[in-house]
Length: 366
Image (cartoon, rainbow, N blue to C red; front, side, top):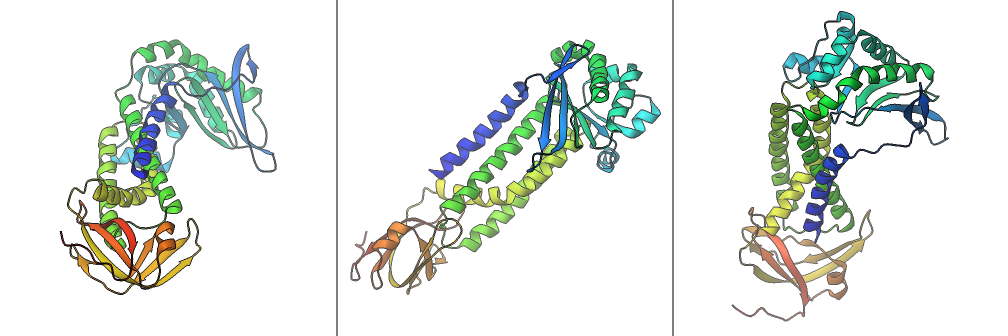
């Protein structure tokens, strides 16, 4: 059941990323500046004090982009040749501002509109200024401060919106070559993150291991994680090479995958090893010599200790076996534990089924 749940969450995460791009949330107008409605959302701490705000105006471009202060990260990716920074020809502006935008019409509009560039500079120089960005329907400005936006910020951002509005409709009919690449990469990365999240919940609330050798699964999972991480990051860099926004997506993907891939890789090895195993199982009865249960974070642990240690598919049965609560309740010392073991699609033997048999029970030869 869990594997289908993980796959469902992965698909939902991918689809939701596409939906969020084409139907982003837009709050109700908070007020008007020069008779133009604006949106504003406040950020507050636990004491309900204002810690920042986001100010926005409608700008229908269907093109996500970001404008922020020039940073060492953007300069480094440009130096590597992964990002390509657009230069407006305004030396002061180009030195201080990084245009994370790939659409030529929007870039040309900023290049030809000097007041809009000055407005961008003024916004980014405000104390606590974070960035200016578009989600495709709204142009936003975010700032960390202890008050809401004032008339100055509202006027400056509106000036940028008015400079870009004449080209907005044309940008919707001429998507950039990187648009679908960005969207697909973000969808896949968040899908992987969703798969890892459900895997973590499974380990948290189910708890018991399916395999005879946890260390072998972990070693294979780490190796798979390293390969998967290297392949995905290489593909992301190659697909986004030459984009002005590549450093933003590459950095975001790097940290998300760094968190998700170790869990995802190990769980993927376990899932594939069991779900694709079509081999015949082997059965063995082992005497139960001791029992123990204890509380832990997540589900309680139920342990059976067995005396014999036969080998199945080249792997020794461990003396300490974690079982479900149902098996533990019917188990008793000197009874026998039935283990039905399959070799695993990846060569990692796993428990297909367990049961408890009387002391002198024997398996019938097949």
